[in-house]
Amino acid sequence: MTLARWVQRRLVQSPQVTALVPADRIRTPGPWHGLQLPAIVHRPVAQEPVRSMDAVYGAYARFYQIAIYAWSYEMAERVADAVEEALEGGDADGQAIVVARRYMLDEETREGANAVVHEVQIDATVLVGV
Image 1 (cartoon, rainbow, N blue to C red):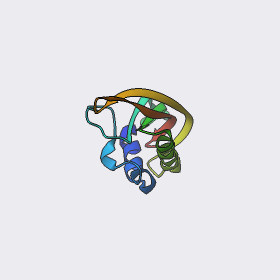
Image 2 (tube, rainbow, N blue to C red):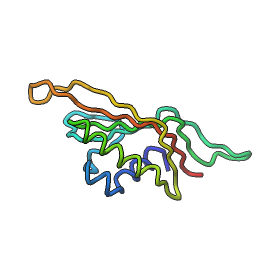
Image 3 (cartoon, rainbow, N blue to C red):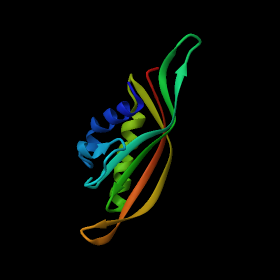
Image 4 (tube, one colour):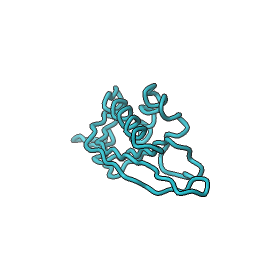
């Protein structure tokens, strides 16, 4: 299982996450045109294999980034809390350890008017397949 598939599965199978962000708004990077908020976009930033003495047996991302976008700071923080809970729970296929959380403001145009998109970025270490 890839890192992105594991994270995607953990997020879309979490009732706490999908109660706040519909599953079709949780995705890896790609076409974002028309993406409704709130939304979650996630990707490995630095990835490497996990090796034993005789084989490669898993995938490891020292830095995995999950970005939460919402129209309010409060909503972005609620989603971030749910995401952290879903990932840190782990399962037989993988585990995540949240390392940091950052808050950012992005200017966005919505219906011809400037609006502020609130972004919370979560950095995690993710390990799958071990």
